[in-house]
Image (cartoon, rainbow, N blue to C red):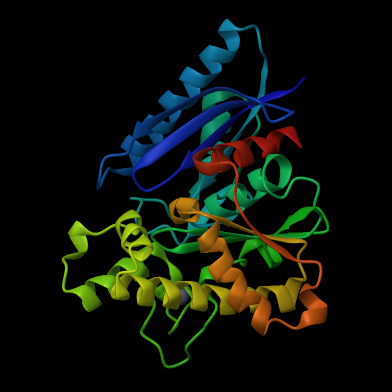
Length: 304
Ligand SMILES: [Zn+2]
C-alpha cells in the first residue's frame, strides 16, 4: 500500500492528511494561516504541518511516497503563476521545488478546486465515473473538469475557471476582469449580499446557514434569494452539461450541505434548459467528502 501527504491550502487554514492509496484518511490536522500573513510565515506553517504528518506516518512505520499540494491560483508544473491575491507572495512561486528540497520527496501541486474535484472523482460522489464536472460553492465558485478519467485544465493548466463563465454580459464587474460571471450570482458571498440588500440586514450578521433556515420558514426574501441563486447556478450547469456531457455534476462547498432540496432546485433549472441529448445521462449530486476533498485529492497526485 502506498501513502502520501495531501495538503489543502485555503485563505485562512492549511489542512493536511495522511492518505493511503485506497483513500483511507489515517491522520488529519489543520493550522490557521493568520490574516495578512507573510509568504515566509505561510511557507513555515505548511512545512510544520507536513513534518507533523510525516512524523505520524513514521510512528506507524508507514513510508510517505510524496506530497500533493492544493493551493488557490493558476498552477503550472509546480509553480503558482498567479490568481491567488489573498496569499502574500504567492505569485511566480515554485512550491514544488521548495517543498521537494525541504523534504527530499516528490511534490506535486495543483489548483485547490481541481483537487477537490479529483478527490470526489477517486473517493467520493463521482467514484467510478469517467466524465465529471465539479463545482465548489463558497466565497467564489471553483471548478474542476474531469474528461475521460483525467483532470482537464486546458493548455498549460490555465483553464477550468468555471466560476467565471458569463451569465449576464452586462452584469457587474468581476475581479477576474470580466463582467457578470457566475460566481457574482451563485456564490455564497453573492447570496448573502443579495439577501442583505433585500432584508436590510448587515452582511456581517448573515451566513448561508441563516438564509437556508429562513428559506425553510418560507420567509419571502430568503425564498427569492435562494431561488435566484439556484436558477443562475442551474443555467451555468446547463451550459456545462451542453459542453461536457458529464456523467455527474458534483456540487461541493458548505452550502451544498443545505439538503437535497438545494440540489433539487438546481436540477429544476439545469435539466429544464440543457440540451436533452447532452444531459440524458447526467446526474447532479452533492459532494460527499466535505472538507476532506481537497487534501484527499492532493494526495492522489502522488498515489494515482
Ligand atoms: Zn469573473
